[in-house]
Image (cartoon, rainbow, N blue to C red; front, side, top):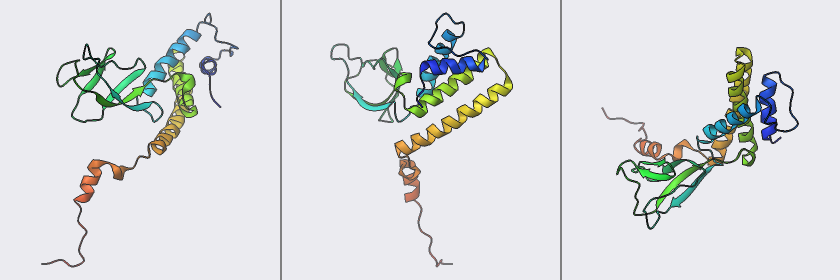
Length: 195
């Protein structure tokens, strides 16, 4: 079942022993805190870079300023070329090796984007909800037993989502360039050795 923001707010309220709401009521003392916690959690969890929020794109510098502006929903950027040290500063791309915002050529990157909560895959939707409730409960109640139970629920959905990420990315250790290099250096053993 896909969760809505109201579902997450009601889960946060339930962790405090509060009755559920029929709609998001901004006058309720805990609603604003729950929504802020969900927004923060959404950014933190998506910053890890999952299969559903990572785009492989080429960013082109502005012809006048030579700046590369990143999209507003960008959380992180990873250059395809390992030799570059590119980071996002403000809304522009910055090259730490050259100490410059100016670029003369397009740059290929993997861009981690922040998607709205309602647009997430169902497993990610549930993971962010579980983490939101966990953090909310820790901030407002702090009951160790509740926290441990909520932590277990978060860990379970995180593990499931991580397994799905591995399946979607078709990750294979043997396709890693450093592993392939090491495997090429291994020579088969001979049954007969010289003394």
